[in-house]
Length: 243
Image (cartoon, rainbow, N blue to C red; front, top):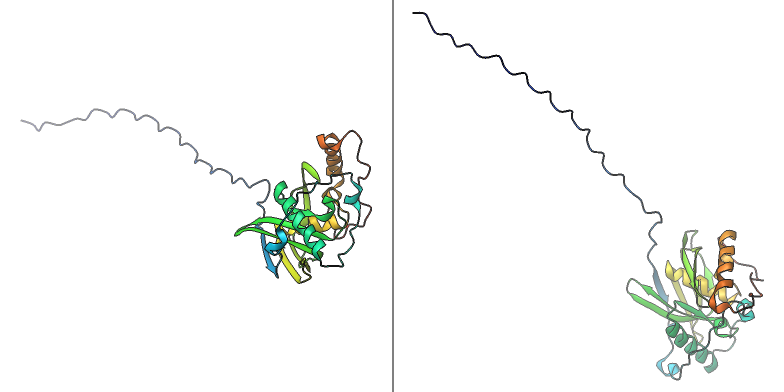
């Protein structure tokens, strides 16, 4: 007998392999439209606080609003470090706390004197105090750009260029020299409040298009009254203008 042969059936044609899907493209990295603000910090040399005894009987003073001539008056340097000056600092401090702002200058309560107070949040808590006869130095050319407002122009905020780093030198209400080195929001506050002492408002530092927008918003504001403000641009030279 011959050997049986096993004959395999022809293989079924294999189905074509499905086309390979292209490798997924990783999502594009989306950068923020606006850079995150740099941190705010302050280094204070000397005492910028009133003694507890000088804080008694503080009063909340009425704020002067945009259009009031006192806001366009270049303030006189303080000559006497006396009880009257300390009473001014006391009332500025109390008024700022009531208004929950970051800074308040003497002309904003109707007093033409080179004095302001500040209360600025920082990484280690709020930094508060006052400066008399301040002067500003800028250690570099770094800038910041971000929203800024003013208690004398309530409810309105516009992006405003400022220096990023500032050294403010002046005196406290007792005549002792003090210094505040500020970065970020503190630097912005020191510049904003010193501007007030020169009759300059933050809207003066806006570019032309934004300034027009700001003036329209001021005219439309509930607090502006029926009459248009009579003073729109600072009559004084704006030192260190960035915009």
